[in-house]
Image 1 (tube, rainbow, N blue to C red):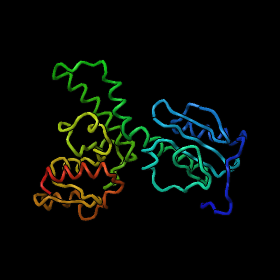
Image 2: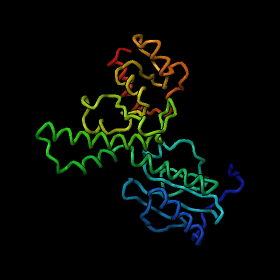
Image 3: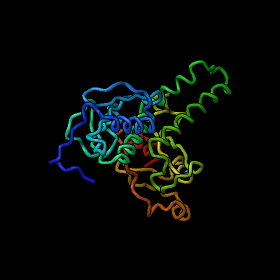
Image 4: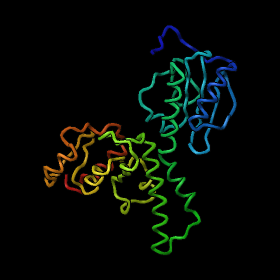
Length: 261
């Protein structure tokens, strides 16, 4: 459903019982469970796990619905949502026709907020701040914590789906570092722009440099990749890798240089 410009919906002010109830449910169901008050019809919510607040408003008990966000990284990566004709209190504000659209948008906002820098790094530092790293065993424990956090962040960022194959089974997905863990500092190790969520076979090929990606997401194939492997990977029919950001492109340039592309 498209909201016509001539309708010019505005937030219900003060928000009525139904708007408050539906806004609270949408926020709660999608990770924003801290109520932070209301101002000019905008209900503000925050999360204990995701940085950045969100504001929700409704034009009526039947919608449409407004969503305004303050997280700059999320604002840059949220993608194409209908812009609101009414300015909101956040950096960007969207107008959603239905409650299901509001829920879907909040789900994406939350997943981006918990995965974008520097949220994974902050979780890693909290979890490891009191752990010793004097022995190899202790260092491996810390590394495993970081790798688990990185995987969770990539699962959230890519929506739990390999962008090349469409595979969604978690057991078949791998958190692929673009620049290897051993070559990074913690900030880069835990940056989702230094990672791809790939199916196991694609992860193995990417890790060994048998495939890489151009800045536009086109698959690049090493001459040493056999025809049998090409067929198994389906390199001639996979789509471009979409959703790449400048951070991905910088790291992919390093991957290409490392493997002679």
